[in-house]
Structure formats: C-alpha cells, structure tokens
Image (cartoon, rainbow, N blue to C red; front, side, top):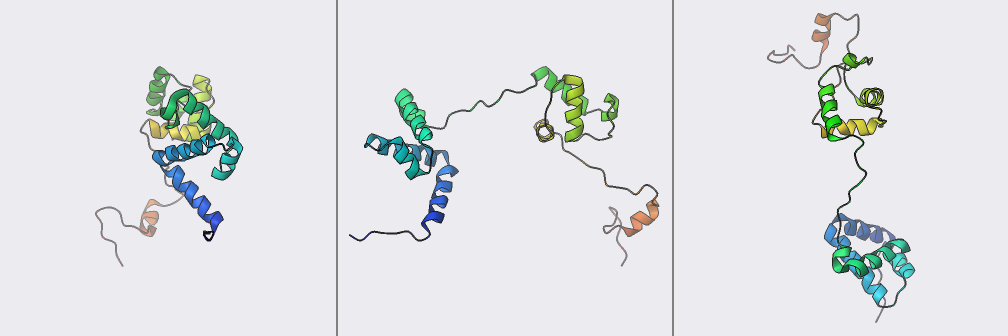
Length: 174
C-alpha cells in the first residue's frame, strides 16, 4: 500500500492541536490515545514528541491514570491562587468605590486601575497591578467611564455647534 501524505502537514498539525484544545472531551480523548501508546510499549518521550507535548506531561497523564483511573484523565477543578482580599475587605472596597477617590486623598476625580491600585496600597497594604484592579472593577459590577476631554477655555455654545452628533431630541441642521 502506498504511503499517504497530508499536504501542508505542519499547518495541519497546528490546526489539529488547536481542535484538540478546543474542548474538554477532545483533550480527554487525546490523553487516552497517549496512554494507549504508552501501554503499547512507547516511551513517554516518544509519545510526547508525537503528540507535541512535553514528556513530563505524558508522565503526568500516566501517573494520574494509575492513581485515579479514567477519572484522573478528565479535566479537574483548578483552584487557582487565593484572593488577596477577604470577603469583608472586598465589601469595604465596593463601598469605597461608590465614593470619590478625592475622599481618600487621591489626586483623581474618577476611579481607574492606577487609582484603585494606589488606594489598595495605601489603605489595605495590598499591592495589585493595574490590570488586576481593572478586573476587580468588572468582578464588582462597576464599569470604567472616562470623561470626555474638554478644552479648559472653550465656549460651551461653540463646542455644541461644532459637535458631529446633535444633542438628544434636537434635529441637526444641514
């Protein structure tokens, strides 16, 4: 029988790996196939190379299978890193965010990532990055709103006349 070849094999391998990673069931099946090859006498290094995984990953699959059977190959709950804030502090921060940052001695009139990060450092002794603070806003149900820039010396009537969109309820003249 003649050897079959897939055109653009490297590209197709990447596409197949993406497809495997797309769902929990596909990842489970992927691990099962790896174990089948290991149980057939292939080494973890060989299976890892064939599957595009590290040998230690395949070893972990084997260990989990030996410890827990098929259930050990399923996706498990990942606890992640525990929160830096307890529930009481979390509620206090929610209350803080309903006030102006100026009430806490911060040089800003709206809350954003950098301002919240500074607030947490000053008042709670917790250092969180700006991006994590932005996530906190979303988790607490707050939306970040930025004010429209306004030229300090501008005439409000001239500004409204030059705007591209008409004010609500008013028809725009052409």
